[in-house]
Image (cartoon, rainbow, N blue to C red):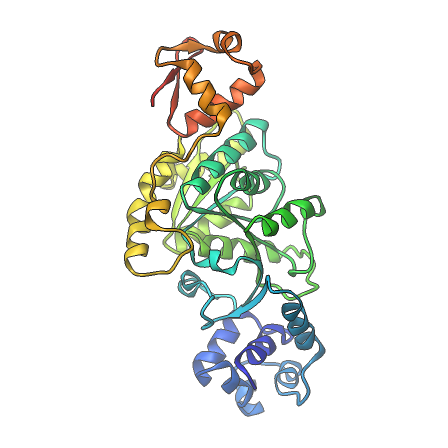
Length: 373
């Protein structure tokens, strides 16, 4: 039996999780060798008779055939297992690495330097704007922006990355043939169409179960060099992702907010526990630069160059460039900029926020803005 078919049986066998699969492969030496183990040996490893029958069936089970049909139908579909050349090496370091990942899109992104961004599904307007701005800037710097395709901050992260020259990865809590939430079907399609990837450890047909979300969160953290939390209550699932990141030795960043805002309390709790307070995208780049350089020095192949991953400022679009030109280098008010440009106050406020997050503009007392570079 070939390697993929053996791993698919381990992946799809009833009541056989990633930890048990890993233990079996370690004991037998390979996935095909597991399938050659005697039934009594498999029982001693805790497998049920149903799982043993599935693993050792003479004919390929229907779910295995379905998975093979799925991956062979399109070149953008991939099934990668532990030991496969495309399997992300950083996942080998986490507890219970997924036995198999289904990927739709650019599978090479999984080996690239990634920053996870997670947060509230009920994000405030300011929180969503900040998430989009951070993701746009960091993706343009060469970091793959990774999140969970949820409403709120997750969606803003993916949207921000898509608005840049960079890439985004969405880790799903369903099978690769489903999208949850349904509102993000178009977003999921655009992620793949624009060079990103959808990733899941759940078999085809899997619906979003409550237990799937913590499992998804551990993969989000495991894929990433660091995790940024933007708006989270004290009961937010984002804190689970942050905890996984801490346990896995990843950096944890948190964006502060108002002490009166419930969705800031989770971020403040993380900061009290040692997460790094983030006020600009540059704070993250400065913190991650040593790890990214070390990763590149180790010879890990990525789809971006070292200069791209650690570059200075990303290019500005024409609107933001025009705004900077209008500002000059003297402090200026929003009202003055409305008079000097073709943008209204709402557009300018959003553009100034992005420039502030990128370290190009600072907000000064008295409602003034100062161009820095």
